[in-house]
Length: 273
Image (cartoon, rainbow, N blue to C red):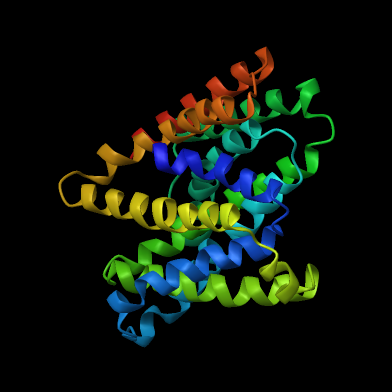
């Protein structure tokens, strides 16, 4: 969770070095793909997994990372973006109800409502003036992360390296194309990336996208999802602490109040099965 939480301030450092946000997301996914190729061995899954695998790869590898970087790019403060990412769990539960007919209990509805109230409280923080576009992109990031969790349920029988390689492949190719048409000057932007930025991008690819996820999958061998999933509520705490240490962001009263409501609601949501 410390690695997951560090993804936001590390990405903001790279963006502050004038790395285009969409190109940075593409390069991050490209590194993930390059590292996983020896483990993937270009194995093709059964055709019945194609729709879910493609939907999951686009949601997770393309939409989540592009909106994460755009939210940070359009925000002068990072902590609200980190808290906003917690909406992925409420969005995931709502998506499960709409797409696969899962039942949402009364307690879940109350907690989902509480999570959105917490975000609304943060929204009224005066320090967020001029950062609303960033929060909007953070909400889209959380929405697609929630959708990805629904698609992933149809992929539980596939090898982890194959799934992550698919994420890397779709993310790298699609984001590179999007960067070319939206940001332009792709070759020039690529050449202008300095060593510090490459180290920051490599950190995101290796430590966050690979190591953190591998550690979680390792834990799933010994513990149930219900035991592990609540720990996801810890990553915004680590992220906010690191944001304070790196950027000196001091949370306001409204942010602390809204953040406590969101994190508590999400924690309790992940405990209800």
